[in-house]
Length: 142
Length: 379
Image (cartoon, rainbow over all chains, first blue to last red):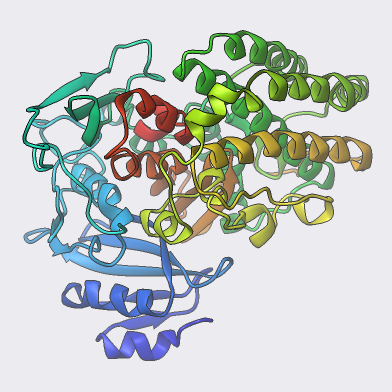
């Protein structure tokens, strides 16, 4: 059963984009967890949580499945000066490590996460490697 | 328990015995690669476990962003180096979907065949270590015999045992010698099944092995889905979710095959599912060889690929479960963002939920059923 995405997007002050491969719902970050909870109540389960540095914002992206073959993309944009958003662990416990990785790689902090620590890199590592501002030596060599 | 689980230092000991934290790994022969597990013990009972990962982190997602699309295929081999073809395929599928590239017909059959063969070689390594984890040396040696045979085939046909770099967008690097395919078909149908029968006799029917695996680390389907567990571990809870059936790709919808499940949900079920999958994979690979059409194995494409701006998330059933590739393109020659959703990463994140209450001796019997590969977890 596919939830009515257009009305969900509207209910949480967001937009629905149907132009791409998967329907994409963008919501303001205040409604990030509420949107996930509403989808989960409809039987939607998660596949992945990650982020993309778009240059202006850091978009937290969740890929969820409405059925075995239907995917939905959820997005919320965070501005550079306040990289925090509600954790989805209360909705889908399995995203715990995925959110730790987003924290590790992008510096996004998840409110209500039980263990907001680095996961792949060591404590004390400086910077967030998957931000576009983090340059590798190879790029400088050109 | 679906939600929270005991954390290190928070779990209450029984009062009589003070708990200790034991560090296992990262450099220890019992660890499959460089994994570090902090295990809190009360006597011989596991109270909590915290996997510490990242010792093999190479920043592959960052490296992707600095390479052209063609150069990325090489790195995909380095993700899960024991199911190489599955990784290459997952990445190629994402790029092909975004750039709307048609795959040569014969190549679809070859890709499916290699993905199933690599499921066998990966499961063989798992089988050898699941025995080793419980103190049985024999499987390690026995499993290497058919595994080496398949590696010889990989080497002869794609040029490398482990890092083939064989897939290309729109097809594969080159066609395979028909004689090699015929020889492989004969071997799969006869000797390989004989090997599996022997393995069943050695371990699957072993009373000590069975009694140690049965009822161990039970998991329900609801728990597995909530924890993000996929692949054979999920199918061992009785759920028949399998992307090869649910979102068919390659030629899976044209082969005769079944999704292997086991409803028991314990360590033994995870063992049984993988053992059955090896037989089914061999059947599928044989069907591919029999029915593969002749023709081109590669679609002609520009040397430098520029997929249109946009994004795509493609899920592939790799050996360990759902391998997701999230590709964001800005229309340039390099991926803007290439995210690898690793099934082994998700599966091992369920370990702290599976082991509390277990006996320390059973810890590795549970761990073996997770079938982790650190290169893919750490990326």
